[in-house]
Length: 189
Image (cartoon, rainbow, N blue to C red; front, side, top):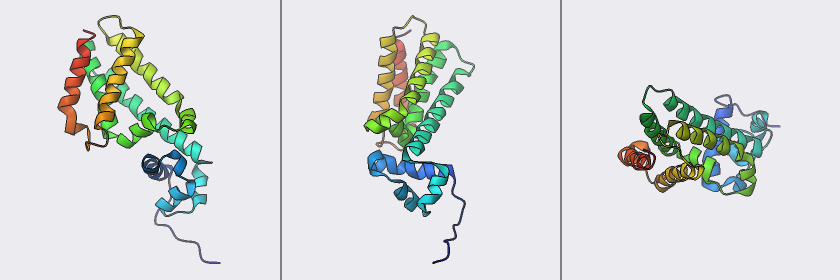
């Protein structure tokens, strides 16, 4: 029996999630195994099972973490000392900023089209959208219909998906993102 391989560093959940995120985005959920994630990290697959019981649990943890990050970003905007229209604009811009500064996160949250994965992510998008919709409705000068809020969300989503993987970060399109937010605000002022 060969001696146990000595590792440079203790394997953490964050290390596993970072490697898994990249693999899920590049290969798709169905084409990634726990063994591949372990190989990518240079650890045995048993080491990963210490942290996650299976691939579905790992993916679910990733999605939950990503939605927590987005929700925190949106909460931070709502806590700013701005007038309602200023908060609305910042909320729209913050959503775009999150999507373009965390492109692989965004892809996992909203763009992976795998039936098994959809069952794992149903709560995150719904909860985030509810928070988003309530914030828009509360801050809006005019009474908005549910459909109008949904169209606003879709417009932001379209902006992000258009630039996702075509820009390095939000800073590359900051001016366009702010102009897009201003354009959307014209419909609710």
